[in-house]
Amino acid sequence: MSPRPDRAGRVLTAVAAGGLVLAATAPAAWLLTGASSQAAPLPQALPAPVVSTTTTQGAPADAAPPPSSSSAAGVAEPAVGPALPRLVPSEPAPAVVAAAPAPVRVQVASLGVDAPVDAVGPAEDGSVVVPDDGARTGWWAPGAAPGDPDGSVVLVGHVDTPAGPGALFRLRELEVGQDVVVTDASGAQHVYRTSGTAQFSKAELPSAELFTTAGAPRLVLISCGGEFDRASRHYTDNVVVVADRVG
Image 1: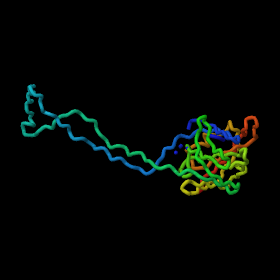
Image 2 (image 1 turned 90 degrees about the vertical axis):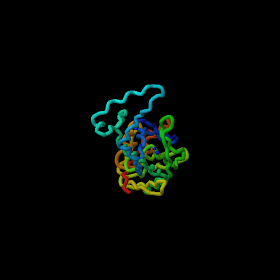
Image 3 (image 1 turned 45 degrees about the vertical axis):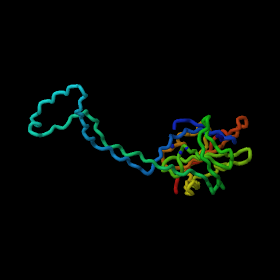
Image 4 (image 1 turned 30 degrees about the vertical axis):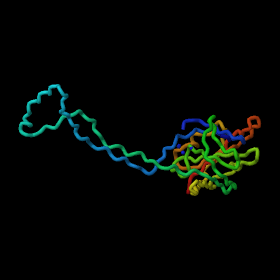
């Protein structure tokens, strides 16, 4: 494969120098939430406007209207001005929170995987950018982060490169029930337990189900698999592992 702050509609293709190609539907942009700051409510009413009684110099003043029965009785009538729109309290300001820390390392003890993670996004041609260094993995930054309450944290990596095996070379060996640990930039560790593994032809990869910011928090690992096409220099399939967050 070669080059999230979800948070959906745009189809992407991941192309790897080592032969990885994956189709992915880009998730919708994140709406970040956090500590709220409520705006002060608007006043319920404004003072009545002042009606000027000043006349232009040289122009005769209009004759005063005859006093009404109430004014004759000594009760002054309020000045009448233009109608004003009714003001109502404003809605609370939308909550704004800092984004969850990005993942920086992924570890799979059962496979001997211990790889750095770099944030990646779409390239100009719509492909998913993957680190050139096969020993590193890429986190789909437009999607969910490990600390988010919803959505899939998607990590992609090479199965191999001209220099040798990639970080996810043994991904196809990962079994259900095995743990994957993702460490974020704050130092917090997020534990995921494998719940499913699959291999898809690249044309049939269920991108909308994998690249999503909705649903329960989980981890999706994607690399190459299947036969290697020497003409195109790409593998025919994608290996996918899905793991649920457990800690």
